[in-house]
View (cartoon, helix red, strand yellow):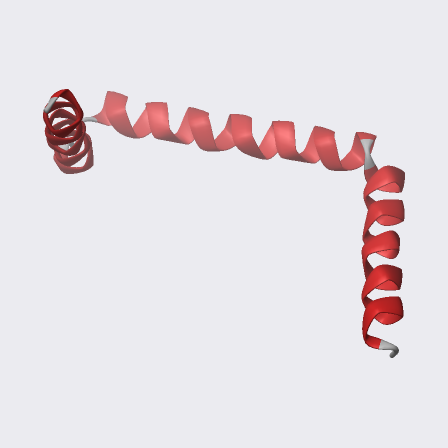
Length: 68
């Protein structure tokens, strides 16, 4: 029962946030988007070589598995 009440409260809060056109709310969302972009760019630049190696290993495993 607590889970259902929690879910209803979450949905009500989500609707309230989406309907809020206040400038502070929009600024908050822009700050969140900016932080996600900056952290993502840092992650990609820092681990670029590792990501390339992992992706290459995944592709090689697919080729080996399916005999391509």
